[in-house]
Length: 223
Ligand SMILES: [Zn+2]
Image (cartoon, rainbow, N blue to C red):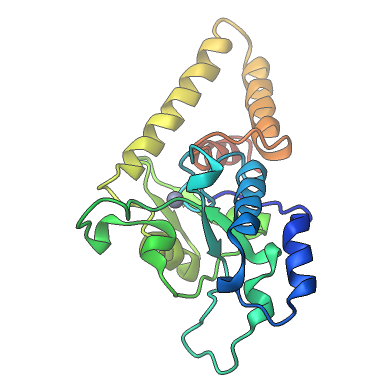
């Protein structure tokens, strides 16, 4: 999962909300949806907010509501909240476009449906509670967050090789760092770890599945 940093909502969404104070998410015109998709795609560095896979273009971004639009025990439907850009996430299709795909082989929003999440993708502290095992599988020591990532979002789905891909991404990053520091001091190695961490976390040069690299670096650098 990436830490999502949202900017100001697109102007077209602001205008639409102003002109249509009673509108619901379903009323949003396709041109406004396109603007929302494009801005999220850019802000999220072309990654799915949940599984961190690369999303090829804004047109294939799915608009996800971090807080379900229709929670299970909803009494009064909060239309305004469904159009609140700060709770929207750009996600992938979670393998749901494959004909006849089984639920257990889907991920992200496609697997989650309307379930509540404990994890807050907009909060760095919350997202950093996600950890990874040596085989690339995702987990958390926080029971609720563990449920979010392993069960609700199905982020250990093997049908699309999520753990295997993460493991490969980490081993490539480790190899790159070792090669870069070959023949140099331990200090140079630690410096390269720090530099990589800054690039990913502070400068947000996010790459597909880089969550596992960040988590490994935090362990190494005792962050
Ligand atoms: Zn995804």
